[in-house]
Length: 208
Image 1 (tube, rainbow, N blue to C red):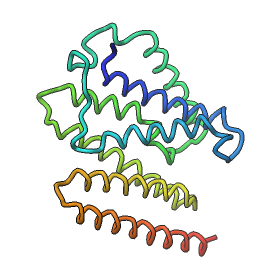
Image 2 (image 1 turned 120 degrees about the horizontal axis):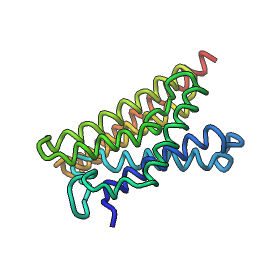
Image 3 (image 1 turned 30 degrees about the vertical axis):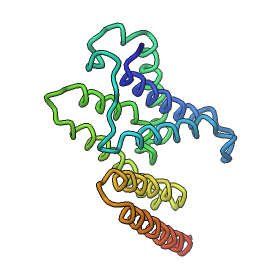
Image 4 (image 1 turned 90 degrees about the vertical axis):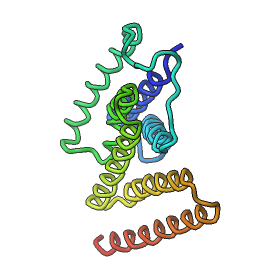
């Protein structure tokens, strides 16, 4: 039975491949049903990252702690997927000729590879992988907001802010606060999101 770490890395790789294939070749319009591969890849990768941002999150292993000790785990499927990932990444970057706004999704396999490697080394603090995944998410979400502001794309700005808001809520749920404090934090964060959204929307309309 494969280790759960390997499975998480495979999922991240599959979602990144779906996203890039959808963006490059398999989209036929702007509606969701016309871009299924892109949507599956995007929401899958983002959900996968969000499941690990909690400091209580732990990846359970089936057997050995190391992800790369057994050569049987690195098979032709993994090699094929990695080659395909690199090929699509090169084509994707050649098409855009800039850092993609949703670079967090594209780099999800690399982020999870580093994340699981950090977890597999016991001499490294247990907080290191959690800090790494949180910083990666915050940087990726911030880049979405920056790109959305430059390109005038409110949806992209909202996407970045929602990721940051969800990260904050997850950590508030983990914290040892009472239910009232958690509820207040949830409401305040929601109000801030709506206020910022209204401000950005007005700004974009003024610049249009």
